[in-house]
Image (cartoon, rainbow, N blue to C red; front, side):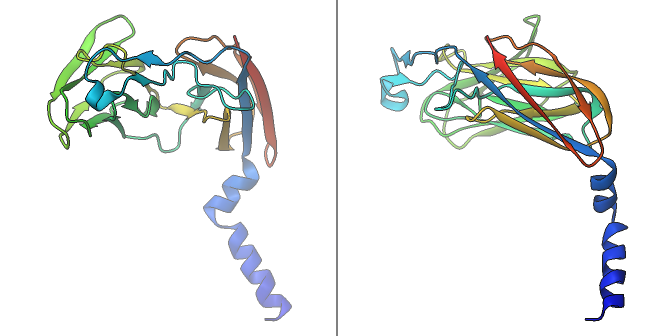
Length: 224
C-alpha cells in the first residue's frame, strides 16, 4: 500500500462522525470511595427455602479498595445521546437484581422472577406516591410497566420488606458505579458542568468538572 492510499484512508477515517466527535469532545472518569462500613447481612425470617437464612444488604456495598457501588453519577445539563428506554428488574433469591439502574424519561420497567415464591414489584416516587404494584406468584413470569416523569423511584416487595431497588429516571448523561466505585463518560461536549452524586443512604458533595476537547477530566470523591 503506497503513501497516497494510506493518506486517503486516514483522511476518510477522520471524516467519520465518531472520529469527529472524539476530536471535538472530551471525556470524564473517576471513582467514588467511602470509609463507611458495609451494611450487615439481612436475617431472613420466612421463605428461607428460597431466600436462604440471610442475604447480603447492598445498601452500602463497598469493594476491597474502598470503592462504593451503586452511586448514580450525573453530568447536569448534558443530554444523554441515547438514554436507555427499558430497564429490567429481576427478583432473584429474594433480592432485586440489579439494585440501582438509570432509564430515560418515557421508559419502561420490565420485572420478572426466578423464585418459586410470591413476589410483588412495587414502584413508588420520592413523595411516596405509588405508581404500580404487580404480583409475580410463579417463576418465569415477566411484566412491563411504563415509568412516567423523572426522578428517583423506589422499588419494593410487599411480601419481603427487606427487598429494595432503585430506578433513576433521567435524560441526562448518567452512570452507575460498579463494585470498584468507578465511572466514566465518553464524548462529552466541552464546557464546565456540575457532577452530582446520588446514593440511597450516603451523601456526596456536588463537584464542578471542566471538559476539554480531546482530554479526560478525572474526579475523585468520598461518600460520607
